[in-house]
Length: 468
Image (cartoon, rainbow, N blue to C red; front, side, top):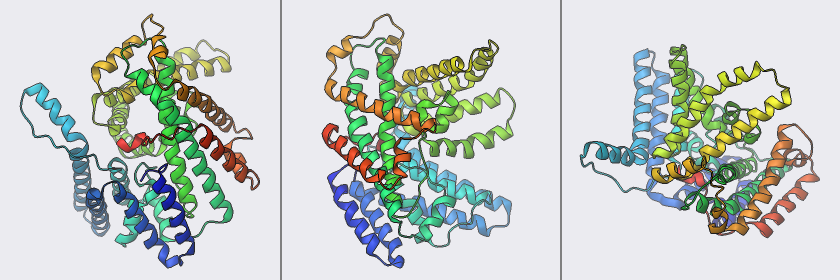
């Protein structure tokens, strides 16, 4: 069930009432039951897949721990990698692979028509990190399959993250404690802030952004629209993360922060350190750093860095546009440092250097954003090309739909970005500092709920990352 759906609005208070009333020994089974209900609400047919993924790494980690022979340890690690990525490849990437092989060779390959299992990209990486950390000696695997499965299926972050490491989440799930009143209120603030970001910001921007990107006309106006598209993805995914963190906080569990004011990073590298933090760290820790240590010299160093961004791009979806997205980010990131070093020789004032760097980052994000939405390669190339034409693209405003919603979304997005700007500067009077005060929390919740009710778009729109 979606975090912004009526069933979830009924499910959550009933679950929390039961959670607070239950004896400590009954809280883990209660959370496990809630997780199963939450996941099977979408499609019960894929529950065995979630169980299989969990079982693979549960067994592999224990066998790695029990093996003293390095070859056996590595064999179990490779078995975990092969089985997990094999399942992910079959469900998410097989059709894309087969269609391209057919196009090149003319050979007919069997395609499947299966729905992408919800959350598979997230829980696959989460279970793999468990095995990796066990193999590296950073983690002692959990003996209880029930407790381990609770880590894999913990419903606040099961479907769209953040991708939690076992060393952080498992100890909290072993000892589920009731939150303090302040923690519960802080969780409610996060939930209210997340619902506002989804319904009032992301969903108001969505209709116009989609119609503009998929329209028959383009032009220079696609640059600001590209930024709004990136902001829509940000507000949508931030919303899920905030609600997940808030719900977990109301259960006495702290989940990782997944965003940290990414649009106020000074360069593209900083952007990716602040955007989808759990995924960036996963790829960095388990792919980029191990390969870079083996191949520290150029051109391998640059190739590995670009490949890591391509993997992040393809992780989002099985289509060429996501590969182009990752490739663009990787190429620009590798070229950023030499250009920045050249600019530093001019010795500009610090404020000017920061402004130029930040403007360049926003331009790259705005240019890349259509790649996140346009799965049709011809449409993508056409629209990207039009961004460098002399056409202003004013026809987008004339032909676009949902203009009123878009205007509201831009206004509320501005409020979000002002809040992010203040938070990035460590200033007072933003959501986090207000939520730290007992008096500020109920006021903030009331304001966010009121704005959402008055200005939110209540046409049902699923979270973007549910498709990944």
